[in-house]
Image (cartoon, rainbow, N blue to C red; front, side, top):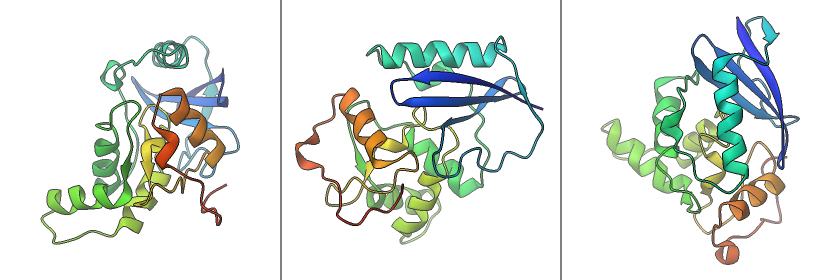
Length: 179
């Protein structure tokens, strides 16, 4: 059983999902891959402890605080590769960005390979089931291109601006890669 609750945020309406004692999902409504691979029966439950805690975390985040990811028990479902990418995302500080290429280098080292495809990393980043908290919005193209955010480029810009990122060196590509 997956327990859900809606949360109205400055970035739009969000669906939070808990499985057992951990947060399993956070999706901005109408984002690409909404609900991801969730197949279980869903039940709305406002008072589920995990969801109450996640909403409080988001309240603090949107109020300008920088709550630690480790304050929440997270359980995103994905392959070992995707889990490794999401783990790296959790290390990106507030207001900072990294590139798909930099993450691919870290992943290659972790898996003992000479190299790893930045596109494969991009696929893992875009399928992150706990957006905002696992900060996939902090990943940009190698040249500062604000590309590939499943929640939409406008949301990516909004979140990075909210966090105080230096937007001077970042830009929206003419050809967008995600809605």
